[in-house]
Length: 186
Image (cartoon, rainbow, N blue to C red; front, side, top):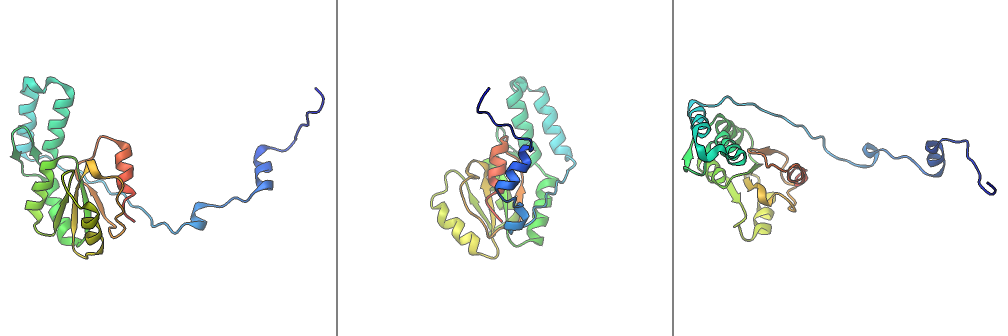
């Protein structure tokens, strides 16, 4: 074959000779992210509710069963309207005493209401029905003492730099939604 030149250099050397390698830590002032996972023991009421689901023929469908158990783990059950004592909720109340400002993401609407009842007036609920979200988020960002409790369905697209602590009370089933939510604050 005529006119073809061969190169004895590895591709990495060619790239280095043509450009500059810049490391992310050299150009971005990004705060460190710390992930803390806590485990909770189910209360007797939660165990009893899960056993009842296991025996309910309507919950034979895996998605229905999983969703019901997921709700019970958070302390609620939509189909019955029950609220269960939950160590997870107790821990969230402790956080509200230790921290003035944080975001809580919830998967289920009844969790939003339950958390507001448990913590009180510092809680601002934002869900799919909330109008003027931008205004609410702006006031919350500027406030020094607001706990935002946000439905997972609106976890994307809002800028909340005033918040450094995020709690995922009940995870969404989507990894993309989780990552979008994490990107909302500093």
